[in-house]
Image (tube, rainbow, N blue to C red):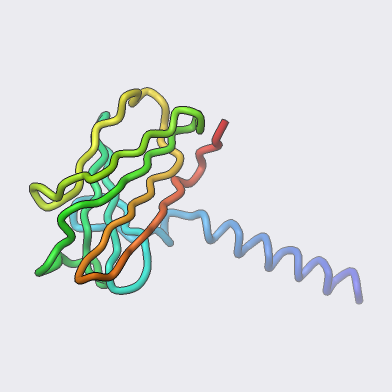
Length: 133
């Protein structure tokens, strides 16, 4: 009996881990990217070649009426030692845009820090199925 309960518990835990990594749980944004963050301000991450675009969005994923004007964006590729930080990135054309030095390495983490209406917001997105070195 104990073996059956243990087997059921392990199966349940592994099922949760597998489900957490499926694309079904990833929220897609209006620009085709991944929405991450929590609270009343979220961010949509879109990678286009060497450009990384981060769109601030409302909690429901829709556009904001008031947007932050500047942000700090950290980009960490697979080779963590090549991480880049872009400070005071200006909001333009609906998003914060930075261009990576070495776009050959797949991204591992995208992090953003900004403020809106005197409230600070920070969010981090870890790209699934990428291993840092």
